Image (cartoon, rainbow, N blue to C red; front, side, top):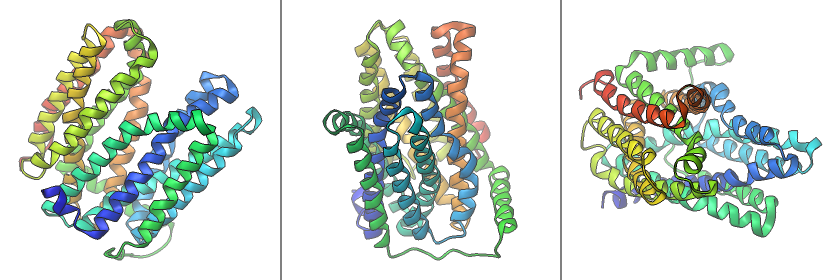
Length: 398
């Protein structure tokens, strides 16, 4: 019922539809880009480079994007960012031979630079159209559920597009997935104007510094930033080891990792729907501590499972509290941070997530070399449990 009430707002519905379409297009390329790079080069190094390029723009551009989002009209930011992402994706079509592969990389970077604006701008815009009351929690739950559906359906659809229409069909679908939300954003009505205070690069740099000070000076934001970084670092490390886990520990073919991904998607859908029952009704630190503890326990069960069905069951169980933790974090940021600085704060968290992805992916092989695959899987699962224990210490009482 609360989700339905949150979606009665026309602007919220437009944002939800646009965000869902955009996410679907991005998920289509999760399969298509590595496939195209490997098909053209036959090199795993070139394929890994493509994956690494997806994280770099968020780290380098993300903080500055947040400062600019707080200065520019957020509807304009969303429109231009979607158009820029569409142009970047279209450029990938030129990467059809080894000597033209840099154009595919350039298009991938352009898309991710645009994405560095899209996510914080969307996060900052939602409270402006939904308010900061109960409807905000309902809207966040609906957004998370839609993302869960896309994550579950996107990779299989991408595989189908590749088999039917090739790389060009997947790229065309992703271009359309950015043009549609750009058009929907034009129809948004209740968008507050930004409060500009001066111009020039120095002013933007000063506002960026103010955003960093806000993150460092707020115990709530500082605590959530530290715990989410630890949580996502462990997640990234474990994700990087999923295929070796399936092959070496479960003695299954590497492609069977798809079963675990699908199970996680199912759990994420359940958690997204359940998040509306807890987010906004219970203290954030209680929700996050319980969610991280449940995820860590599920990871321990998953990575010590004797076979694929048991591992998939624990993976689904991990997805439920994982989704709740994501919704709770975003809701608390939107509800507590003033709209004039929300772009910078949201970009700070997005940058932290990208850093966590790079850190986890780098730590995983190093840890395997020290303690072996089984030990590494246990270590990073325990890191999530320890993160849960740190939440009450780092976050303030409500």
